[in-house]
Image (cartoon, rainbow, N blue to C red; front, side):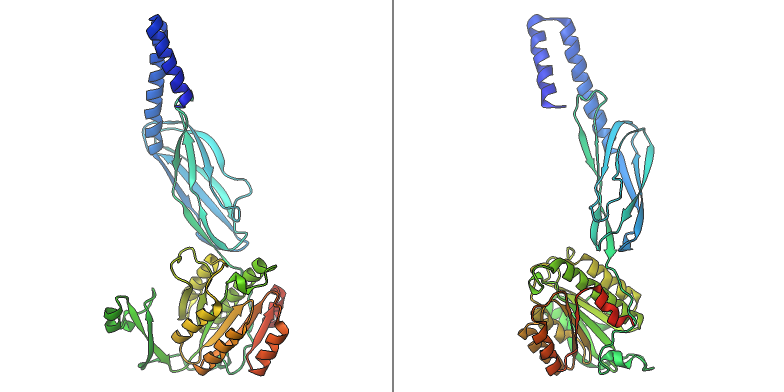
Length: 395
């Protein structure tokens, strides 16, 4: 009930006391009764509301995702009127938004069908469903109810590549080798923190006890067929006028390369300094190299979530992650600029026994000098200004 209604009933009650008119007292009692009954009725009726969404929680760009939204009243009191508004981000919103006004009887339900449109990659909340209701006369005012949220992950676009055309000395040059990839358990070259999916046989219990966090052993592979993608999403390392398009293109390139590596049954890993809404405490996110479609899905989910921002410089990320990679790994650096410090780090990668490939995305101001540096030190370089430049790997 609004404050104006309360003031009005109080005013009538004061008048009734002065004039001692039974008719006015009757009106006051009637309005107060309607208020109390309506307030209790409406509150209990809303507490009986439940909602359920059924839809596929993962999709690719351009796909349509049908949603079934069911609103049910599990109580014994009817909801006289109910206003429903479904909250959906504009990037995936349906053409006609869900806004309905209805009544809902006891132990009844109503179902709505609408279609989400995955226009852009991202990590999107679906909901909450906002509901408001009141009594029939509008004396008690609106009471609100809010449902829980669901999540839709829209994967980045994948451009199917036929070949990355990387140097023959890289692991991609051994694709025709018939011998599988093995790890030598007697050759331990380091440790790292436990990641979901790691075998418990790899756990180093002494190191775990010393550090207080699960540590797993890293073994040298007998034959290394590993590609690790390092995606730079620090906006300060991209051209100021084309940051949005360039970073989105970088994510498409990373997703396409990851799909090609996994499709060719190789180990693929991913590191990015982009902002991850599910991992706000860490400076960057890493997925250790593995094979299989499950690995590709993990990488695509990370690429769907991350956003460009003012984050850790790419050089610092490479310095830390290079220590965790096995000998012979091909490191693909996807970024917007290649400063002198990044070249120094690539030389260090070579001393570690790693092979670096640079993929510059978007407009690059010093592209001529960067190409000269790469040619001088025999570092493979690719410059992709738009998606059409990916044709070099489609043929």
